[in-house]
Image 1 (tube, helix red, strand yellow):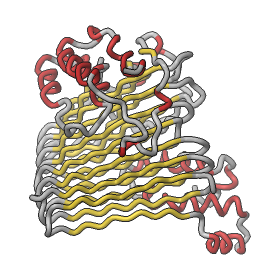
Image 2: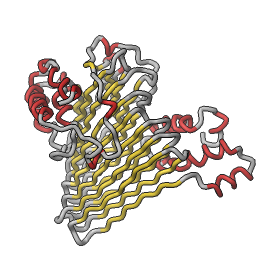
Image 3: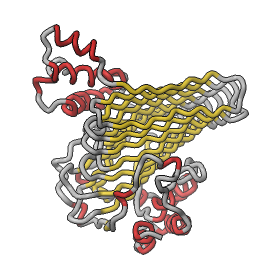
Image 4: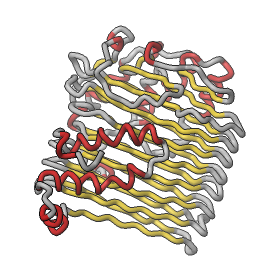
Length: 434
């Protein structure tokens, strides 16, 4: 067992609420018997975990009190919980809640709420589908519980913010979010992950679970804004009930390593998932998305679109899987992954997969890898647009459709200048974009 695997087992198990102790104990046992994936493991073939081969310190509330005013993340104006290095920051949070909404830390849960959390936590994670889930359980000290009552529509945008500051030595942070939408309820939730780009190494082990009951609708935005030495290995696991709808949007700027696993399990007839995503690594950064649409019952549908722009010597990985179970007749599923390489040294490894065991389905999948179109570039230059500006326009245009498609206008309006600056720090080069 490596030092990285041994270190969490030495952490103080009494640092969490009593009702979490059983979950932590089970996690420690499972982690003790786990095996770290290597490059010979199919799902990790293109992503090295070398960044984890160093000791990580557990932060305390005092170290998490670091000034985070320089970290940029969207302000949505609705109920917001902010965590810094895994510790709750009351001074940055807004906890006034409308009727029908529960949004609280695990540490503040009443005995009745704690029982509901304990009963649901981990149930959306399919067995063996998340290698780092036992580590998350083993180190779980706090988390967020979001529950929307039946027949309730929450108008205000909900926001959970996870910040990492990077201390003088590498730190590890455990993030956990459990979302439960009651029958015929509706809400919009944004998760933001951001850091001090010039800070030290911070390893975030994050898990989000989305449980949608019959007829509910969740808009879920997950913004990975971490840069620099940040390491994030996370997972989003969703379980969709009858006629429920999950609309998801994912964004990943690059950092030392980002690996995100997305698993959506259609468990109720008529369930639908719309999933869009953008990744933008540059330098020597690594972004790895593994997605899986599980269609377990009949008459469900999914549509998935991911686009990546990989620059410099960066690496991106996209593995998108659609799994149609034998009883999932009348399924409709689409998946597309389009990539733009803006450098001869940039790398993309993409693999869309279809695994079908039913005979009455409509499925499509595809992937493309391209460079900037020289003919379009030439056309813009003949119209007097400098080459550098034309390249920025074409790159931004590659992802603009997904950005404009965002229904949460506050998030969209905040992202547009951020993404434009990603391609060109010089404002002159983005004058036609904003």
